[in-house]
Structures are given as structure tokens and as C-alpha cells.
Length: 216
Ligand code: 5GP
Image (tube, rainbow, N blue to C red; front, side, top):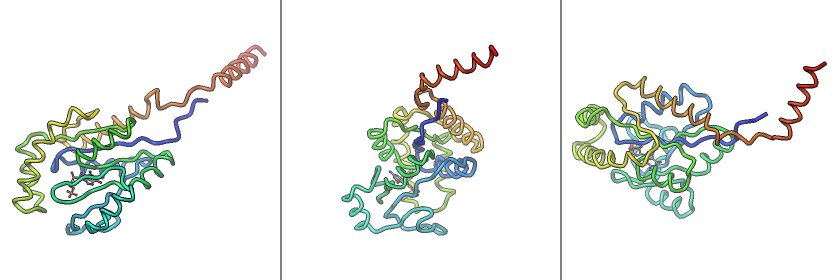
């Protein structure tokens, strides 16, 4: 029999702040038992309701830099004045166990993963329009005016990087965007190069046995 490769796929979800990656990410995890999330490390302070070890590992800049030196990150980047990084070991462990792993990371980080992991699936989440993006950032109400302006300017630059991704999903309706990313993951799981080679000898033996049975 041909089996699926034991190792899972790495799915990288990114796009500008306010594009709705977080919501899509949560829905994907809720609807797919085989999917695992990666918990990033950051030097940013927790927002109201965020829990250490659940939303992020919140660390000091000194602790973060120590982890960089140890080579603990699959990728890391300096985003909006803070460090963010993906701890490598848990991701590798989940992939080796056959789970697909989803990373919700910024574009600089995604491009680092792309350089080192040709097998990743890179999905860019787009807001329906820049006006809608600005309104979402303002409505979220978690950031100061200066930070909103910074995120909006970065978003504008980031959209130019879209062509480096494999897929783009416009998030105007969350349910539809989730379905599109699910379809991408499903299609990737069916790719011929993700299937182990047929054991031709076994197949020949099996065909022979089946023919013998058939002739009895
Ligand atoms: P926030 O502060 O809103 O939680 O995240 C800010 C940005 O950092 C978002 O674009 C988010 O995707 C990105 N981010 C979160 N975790 C990581 C990570 O581990 N690595 C990188 N490169 N970016 C991350």
C-alpha cells in the first residue's frame, strides 16, 4: 500500500495587521484535529486577556537575545518595535509526529522560513481594501494612534511582498476565507510528492495474488 509521508506540512499564514489572520488561524485550529499551532515568543507586553504560554511566551529582550544565540528559533523578526520568534523544537516535534503545523507570523519571518524550508505552504491573507484595513485597526482599539499609523504604513509595504507567497486569500468574509485556506491545506495533502513511493515489488506480488484468487 502507498502511505502518506509521516511528516506533516508547515503552513505559514501572514499578511498585514488587521487582515484577520488571527481569526482565520483560530477557526482553522478549531475545525482540524490534525492541525497544531506554534506559540511564539515575544518581547511585547501582554494585552488584556492574553496569557503567558497560551497566546505567546512573554519574555524580556535579554531572554529573547539569549534564545537567538542558542539558535532556538525557526525564524525571528523585529516587528513594530518588538521581537517575535517561532521556537524551533516544538514545531519540529509536531511535524515529525505527522501533524500539520500553522505559523501566524510576519512577512520577514515568513521569508526566512521560505529560505530554509522549501516544503512550506505560504498563504498571504489580504484585507478587502486599505480603507477596510484602517477601519479594522482603529476598531480593534488595542493600540495607540502612533502604533496604528505604524501598522498601517507597514501593511502598505507588506502587500507588495504578496508575490513571494504560494497563495493569496482575500478576507472579506471570514467563513469563506477559512474555507479557502482549508481547501489549500487539503490540496497540499493530496500532492503526489507528499505520497511515499509505491513499493513496486509488493504491488506486483499483490496483483499476482489477486489474479490467482480471481482465477480460482
Ligand atoms: P501582535 O503584536 O499583534 O500579536 O503581532 C504583531 C505581528 O507579529 C503580527 O503580524 C504577527 O503575525 C507577528 N508575529 C507573531 N508571532 C510571530 C513570530 O513568531 N515570528 C514573526 N516573525 N512574527 C510574528
